[in-house]
Image (cartoon, rainbow over all chains, first blue to last red; front, side, top):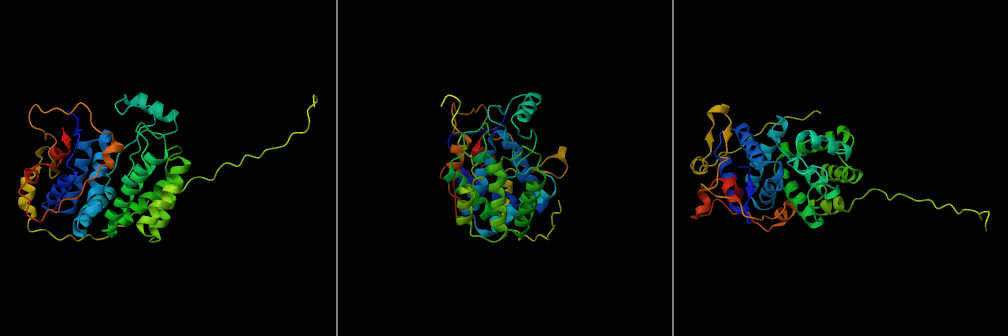
Length: 226
Length: 88
């Protein structure tokens, strides 16, 4: 039976138990593997549940606990383990057969198999049409801020996830990110790298939008019937 | 992509080992050393509710981190992570 969330998941106790269990593991490699396993067990369909767990930790856990989790995420990212989720394009159910989903996503201009790290996932969810209900701006800001606070507890996590964003922005296949997503991720990366405070940074990221298209109106001369 | 590999130093918690056992972390023989969080977590016969919040609502839920180091004798303390979140 695939994972199905409860109507009222106990995120606080789950976050606490996750941290305590990670502390019981002997190495950062084991902790990264356990986090990746949890990520996979929850699955792409309910990746927001995993995200919320990270958000709760980023918002409220002691710095040592945030460091533990962020270090583990960085290690997982460096070693190619699962540290994210996939979003399907609007109208494509998560359970659609792979071949159909691939064709559909290609048609809609979205990469079929690219896994998005937590920050990119939030940016795509907020900025692009996907199969999910659009992410509300306050929720986007709150979740992004919590992840930044989580990563801030670990130098490796900060460096690794900044490098991941930089690499994605320079090499992601065409169609992976819309213009708005790219702009927001670039804004996020620049502000984050420059040490901008989290609050103002996420507000600026949410408000960033591509330059409006200038429509030049050409006044036509009187037609033959004028 | 060139990703730096900084050294990572983590302090072990004195409370960790017992708690990890309580959370049913186990080593999966089929996967060598990979520590495994249990995937079958719901009570036998448990099924999910008819309707659950969507991902957006889930992310927007108000939920606070519970401090693990100040006496909590609740049932939740002994339960696997996945079982606190859902059915699987």
